[in-house]
Image 1 (cartoon, each protein chain N blue to C red):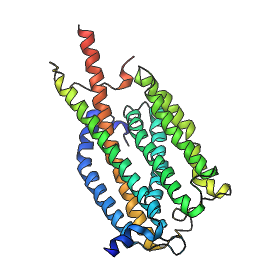
Image 2: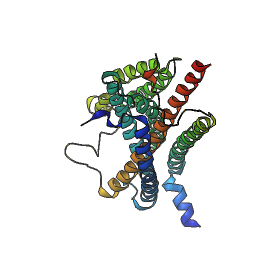
Image 3: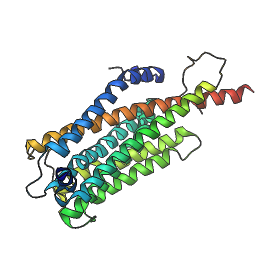
Image 4: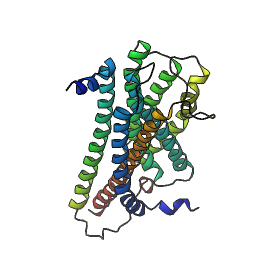
Length: 242
Length: 66
């Protein structure tokens, strides 16, 4: 496999432009279907009543918070090791989106915790490690823009992303390793999901919608990063020409 | 009308369910809007730069600069 086949930014932008209409349209479709399924079709929980519907935004947001961070860590590794020219741009483009998903996971979790646990927040392993993830995203965004020379900022942010990756398995297994108010995994289990299909399907449709949304936004933002780099290169050239 | 009210009440959990969905919509749409806004601004800036050299000049990645 030739890693650098899509390393040419111009070629990447053309590829992104071909993917975007599809990923965008499918994201809208999946999110609309997911919204309909989660609000109208799926049943109320026998214990939690209608508050269980918060799950259909909370769980996909939390999955994406971990997924986007994993993408950033992988991109950072290939930026540091192979100097892949697009990797830094993917990481930069993804960080604000991941921060948004993490904020959503925290906020919707809080809105779900109040009626079910009786509290907006507890400092337990799951909630605290996700809050740490949120700060890692903010730190990544701040670092990558902290230097006049953007490549220095990107490198510092990439190191942060790799060091912070240790938090991802901690979040995933926090509900098994420590006692917590948060319930253990009910979908991504080795022995298969324990959640009823009438709730699993709306959740999966919504999760697909969130993922397609991320792909679309990420492609748009990488395109912006490529154009910003072009703009910098041209203004540098213009300065040198005078 | 009563059905609508029952639906909005969400079995008494409406004050938690609707803010959760509304917040999700605000974040997802907000990110989309700021992303498109920046993209259009950059496209304008690029097209306003009347660069005499061909537009096919390779984009310089951040690493290319010292």
